[in-house]
Image 1 (cartoon, rainbow, N blue to C red):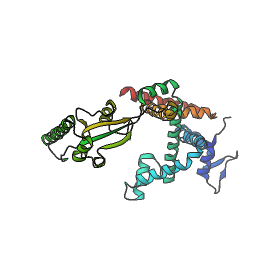
Image 2 (image 1 turned 90 degrees about the horizontal axis):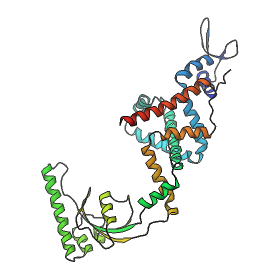
Image 3 (image 1 turned 60 degrees about the vertical axis):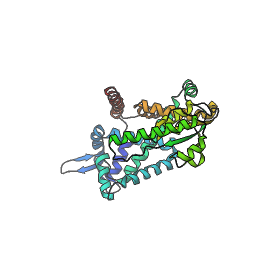
Image 4 (image 1 turned 45 degrees about the vertical axis):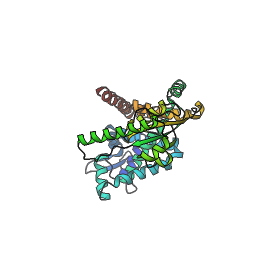
Length: 331
């Protein structure tokens, strides 16, 4: 006889509660009584497990595993779930309207259940990220260090913003662009003639945060600035300024590189590199969360005792892979 796993116990509690429970002749609980017959918990379970059980079962399995695996992160996960619900609820006029939306989109009729669902998925995300980090090799880390890790630099800039209204015509925007670029080019000519960068920044820069300091931006590294600015700054030699205005979303920049530092040692940035490479892997592989959680369940010796549910589980996992692989091929 197949063993009845924990889901039947949960169903029995949900259905029968703590009140009066009718018994069949063989001792099993009855959930519905009729004139000539009764429906047992076992028969209800057998019907329901074929249609609805696998999703509930996987949630129960993951909750058991992840609550232990990430016990130190449970409070943060609970706060994340609470904050998420509060943020979502702000978009609705009332709690009832929000609950109706949650029920329509997610199928939950109780906010506590929805909160537990968000918490569980947050823990799943942690497990997936940790799995991704474990896939990163020393060879990948070393290659990333050589190609992407650079030392900090210091730079100053003079910003000439494009003065144009949002509702301006294309012609007006084009003229404003030309005017800003021309002004930046004129400043570069002044630098070529030997005028002081800091004094020009104080006089002409539209960056209120740095102009009083002669345009000084302090120390920064890759990812701290907008990409066009960053690329131009790193391409300069120390005490060299850009000979052409650098366009970004902020306007036109004249950049002076003032200092550069040696890059950090590999051991000091190894964790950062692993996180960056793991983030890339998470973006590239849409099935990684499926693999991560499947492997974690195996690692924890998860074994589905019911043959029917075991078959459903395998089909469910395969269907997820097929879905994402088909979606990716189509795109």
